[in-house]
Image (cartoon, rainbow, N blue to C red; front, side, top):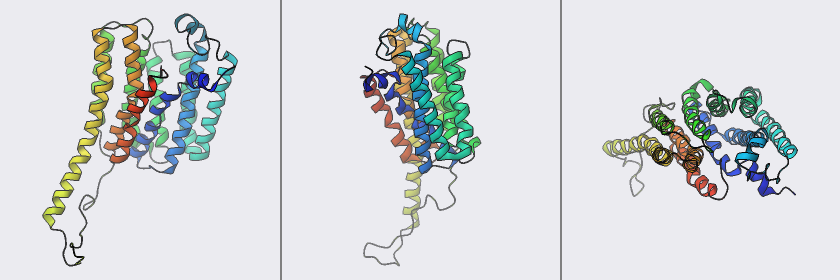
Length: 322
C-alpha cells in the first residue's frame, strides 16, 4: 500500500522549499508583496509537486534501469497513481491560482503548467530541456508579479531562469557523471547569476526623507528636543549600507553553497558529485531568491526567504530533492 512517505518521495516534498521564494522575489520586484503572494506561492508549490510526479511517471521505464529505488520502479507507487497525483495537483494548483489571483494569475499559471508538462513529457531529454525548465522557473517568478506589472519582475525572472538552466544542465549527468567542461561552464553561469542578483536596478526608489530617522523627543519627553541632523544622517547612512550589503551577502552565500559544489564536480566529475551539486542548486536557490528580494527593497523578507536554504539542505539528507 502506498504511504504518505512514498508520495512525499514521489513529489520530492522538501524541494518545494525552493519554490515560494520565486513568488516573493517576483512580487517584491513588482511592488505587490501582500497576502495574495502567499496564496500564489501555495499554488506554485502544488504545480511543482505535480511536475515532479509527472516527471517520475514519464521516466518510469528509464528509472527501472537507472534509479530502481525510486517510488514507481520499486513498486511503492503505481504508474496510475503517480499520473493521478500529477493531474490532481495540477488542477489544484491552477484552481488555487485562479481563486487567489483571478484572471491575471491564471494567465501566467496556465502557461506555467503547460511548460512543466511539456518539459516532463517531451523536452526533458532533448537539447531544449534546460531552456524549457528555465522557462518554468522564470514564469514562476512572473506569477508572483501577476497582480502588478510583471515586466518589472522580468530581470529577476531571467536571473532565476539562468540559475535553473545551470542546475538542469548538470542534472542530465546525474547517472553517468560529467566531463570537466560542464561544471566549469555552469560555475561561470553561477557567478554571472550572483552578479546579476546584486546589480539589478532597484525597484524601490525612496523619496527624500524615507531613510531619515524621524524627529524624536528628548529623553525626558521634551517635544522641543529633536534629534540632531547629524545623528539622523548617520543613522540613514547605516541603514542604506545595510540595505546594500544584504543582497551581496546572500548572493555570496549562494555562490559558496552551489558554486562550491560545482568546484568539487570539476575536481572529480563523478555521478555522485554531480547529484550533490544538483541538490545544492535546488536547496541553495532560496539564498539567491533572498538576494533578489532584498535587492528589490524587502531586506527582512529576503533574509527570511534565504533561511529556507539551510532547512532544505537538512531535509535533503533524509529525502533526496533530485
